[in-house]
Image 1: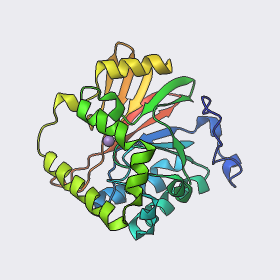
Image 2: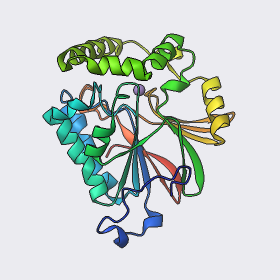
Image 3: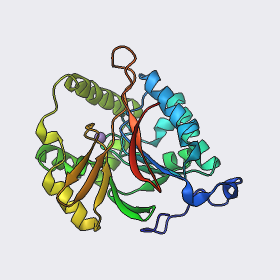
Length: 268
Ligand code: MN
């Protein structure tokens, strides 16, 4: 069903694949789980999503910031990370394709991780055709064009040279920097988000134009909604957090596309 780019389907040839009514199986979209071993309830919700919710899926798309941070594929040596990769690998083993896009926190996820997770990496933005509708997928950070400081950082951080320098650091230095950035962003959690940290009409309009689509799915802003924009419909995925809210509050959810169209679901 992915027609824009000749993607190898990880589902092909997996035993059991032929038993499912392939055309009717839905696509699921999640993003911004910010997984780490510090948030066990959110991790448990992701495990439930992979093992139970996604069981009926044709494909699962993770549109960035699956992990709180990613400092190189040598993170796979950490038991928590290895456990998450093995969990995700059960998707292709069950005939469910897994596609992962980078976010602004985990853009260093590389080939070794994708292989360990059984995932196919998607560039940002990427266009799929799902149940007859062309849909642009993006993490969303590149659409926040009012935040010029961040866009400058993004450009630098995505350069091969900067990544080479960073990845050449000893693991514990990289980890210390990531932990510091994490505590800075924890401190920012309490403040109301400024408008400049949301996507802009210009950024969204340009993406619709560039991709020739009228439907967009993205995450990053943590403002789940369905927006009618001048250029089309914009669906925003929720972030997940089952560890910081009071009274067992579950924040999180996913989008599902099937023959009925696109629908948003909260975590069950
Ligand atoms: Mn993000």
